[in-house]
Image 1 (cartoon, one colour):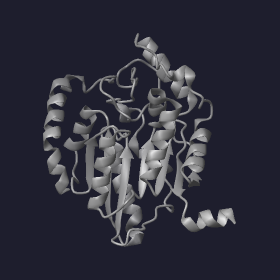
Image 2 (cartoon, rainbow, N blue to C red; image 1 turned 90 degrees about the vertical axis):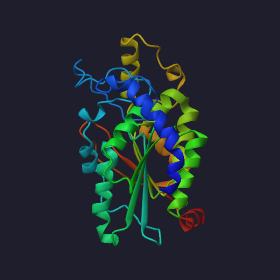
Image 3 (cartoon, one colour; image 1 turned 45 degrees about the vertical axis):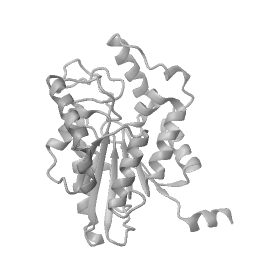
Image 4 (cartoon, rainbow, N blue to C red; image 1 turned 60 degrees about the vertical axis):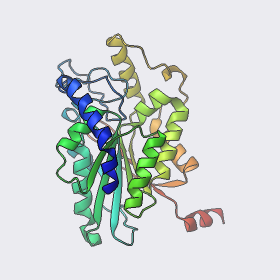
Length: 291
């Protein structure tokens, strides 16, 4: 996109940060901030199979634990709708980590959209960790269709960047927003209000939203890892009111506060998590409900 040329100075700074921290790339990270993927596999302490402690979920070796392909086996094929008259389909991957899943999502959407006259598919991946974003960019074979930016999703800067991106596509919202294993990190670091704010913002940007929430046991695991690493525990953890069945709480927020309706809840994946898929209610659906 043309407007991204204006971000070149920021990209240069991020590359400098990457060079300074490059020696840490092959190890679990608890540096920087990322709304990226998490894992609850604690079977041993080898760096290839144990994620280590993280405050924001920015694991450098995440896909060694939870292969991106596993999510593709969960995603249904008959729910993706193309509403744009110019056949443009846009997706947002929040907490994209190093982009492995983002690239596979692009291939997935391209394949299933063939029956809809092959629209032009674009994906935008955002993550707080500059190292992970650099990894994603270095392997990007489709820079015309797949974009990565180091952004804090809850920040004003991110909102402005995403608005400009959608303007370039002549769209007001993304056709789908993906939130894979990031709600826990938002919740732990920003509390109940932060989780609601995150879901409200994601839904405001979306026609459809896909969420893979972490169960409550993952919260406890994340807390134990920090303590084991002799780091400060999550200060908001003990005061959280949304506990227990997080999927139920998330569904309540999305359907009650964001005016979305449930499309489908998938079967669990290999590490015991389901995908929750919701879509924006159409105006006539709202009217009919109130009659």
